[in-house]
Length: 230
Image 1 (spheres, rainbow, N blue to C red):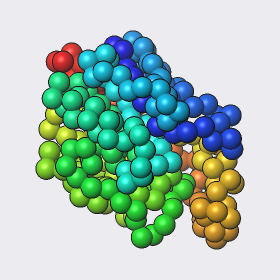
Image 2 (image 1 turned 180 degrees about the vertical axis):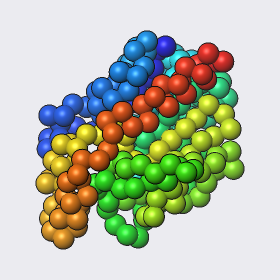
Image 3 (image 1 turned 120 degrees about the vertical axis):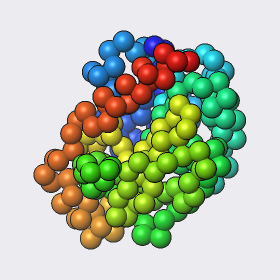
Image 4 (image 1 turned 30 degrees about the vertical axis):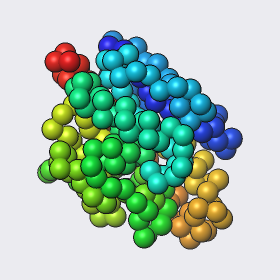
């Protein structure tokens, strides 16, 4: 399967040594999806969006932007997402990808009052609880009619969505490793995080409880299953 990763994260010097957003996503997913061929489309630095039929599936990355920010690629991306829905091409969104998908499909996303969150958080999905890395302030605040909430957290009621067409999304970052999050906390302290908030964030990742393959099997199976029907 040919999978496009739409990279919506601009280069960021403090974290770029970990690789681009698309590289990190590919490293997370490819061990459980060896037959996939991944192509990075670096939308954040001006690369044109593909035509919807160009790929068998799409992954929408995180971003430093919010859905409310004026970006040249924002509305075209929403239009692409709606075309993917019409064509039944599978799409998976992460963090900002989760939010922009909700916006494109009739929901809303906005800044949360509790401020910026970085570190490990606990998420519930049915009877299952797991830890995942978070790095965001914005959240989905209105659920599209076509979506069902599949995961929640105490600070984030809409932590994951499944749609009634081939689309899934998560607010957390299953692709992130512990060291990337630790480096982010170091860089964000004094700006996005107060010293007390940074200390809480460091404590949250101290036990390194996030599974490296978190969600990878499920998302690989999602693309295989929906891609076969496309």
